[in-house]
Image (cartoon, rainbow over all chains, first blue to last red; front, side):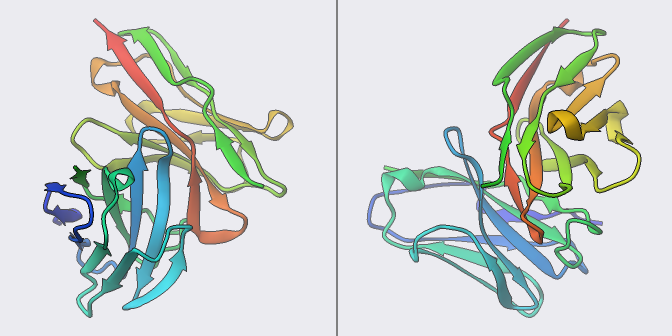
Length: 115
Length: 114
């Protein structure tokens, strides 16, 4: 069974631009979560999608948005990029998104650098 | 507010030595606790999780963790470390009864000397 895939793996953008990251979950998984990972802040939860609906949201500004398609693939978008958005963005999928019963599988991440 | 603390930013051990990585949490009720590992260039992988019951939890790759309510700790252990265990280790706790959101520690980087 293929794992969680994220594209692209590396991305360089300049301030003010926007970016779209893609995540393909494991087949059969309906929950997709996104995280931002930085050395100073660690892993921070961005949002979770389940059956095309945003079910949970972290404390990030509205510049960060996402969506999920009917095949459970998900995209996240960051508009008006800032230097502080440079980070590793991780996507994770699970069957139902319940950490108590599911196992969350992570992709390798997309490394975003904002210049 | 809930929080997870990993007091050790970086640890170095010799191959074959025992390992203990510390995790302390702040949580009002019985927490749901997790340990993940992140190897270079790879995604995070769940090592083990604790919900209730036996306070000693066995995980993959020979790891175990012990939940100690009196010390608010959930330390990860391995009796004999292998060079392939060099990685970043993260402790996480379920966010205030929200079984779909985790709070994460900042991680402990483990280096293994040959």
